[in-house]
Every structure is written in structure tokens, then in C-alpha cells.
Amino acid sequence: MNETRKAVISVLGTDKKGIIAQVSRILYENDANILDITQTIVSGLFSMILIADVSAEDGAFDTLKTELDALADRIGVQIRTQRSEIFEAMHQI
Image 1 (cartoon, helix red, strand yellow):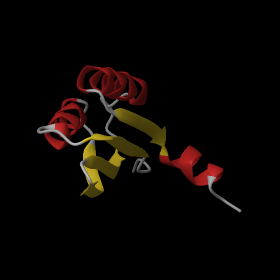
Image 2: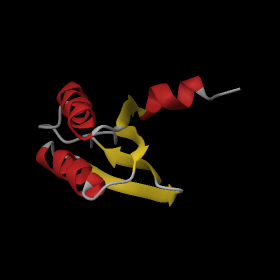
Image 3: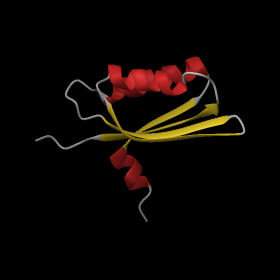
Image 4: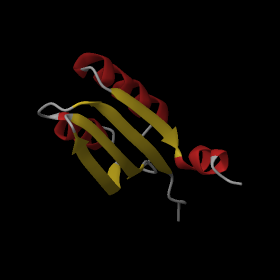
């Protein structure tokens, strides 16, 4: 059985309609599954962090990252996509 590979995706920017829908669409189209998600809006500032399973054979991490980067440019938000093992290694004491 394949080991689950995860991505940590964070989104930050001015709140506007459709951010979650557009990020979710790209994840779906890249055969990624949302495992956990949190989002909030504070004084018109949208923030979201999600963990996605990117272990599907068809799901190429680099393609997913490229598409999310392009979405960020189109809608004017910051989207950071990291492999979870890199994220976890950076935050170990």
C-alpha cells in the first residue's frame, strides 16, 4: 500500500467570493483530497490552511503547485503550497 503524501496549502488575501471554490476545484482536478481545512475572515482579510492528500498516482505535486500559483496571480491572493514532510522538517525544534 502506498504511503499517504500530504501537502500543506495556505491562502491569504482580501476576502472575495469563490476563493475556497476555486482552490477546491484545482485540488479536485489534480486528484487531491482535502483532509483538513480551516478558514477565517478577520476585518476583511481571508486566511485558510488546508491539508490535502496528494498521493494519487495521477496527482503530480509540481503541477498542482503551478496551478495554485497561477490561481493566486489571477485572483490576487497569496497561495503557498508545500509538501508536508518539508513543512514538518522546517518546524521541528
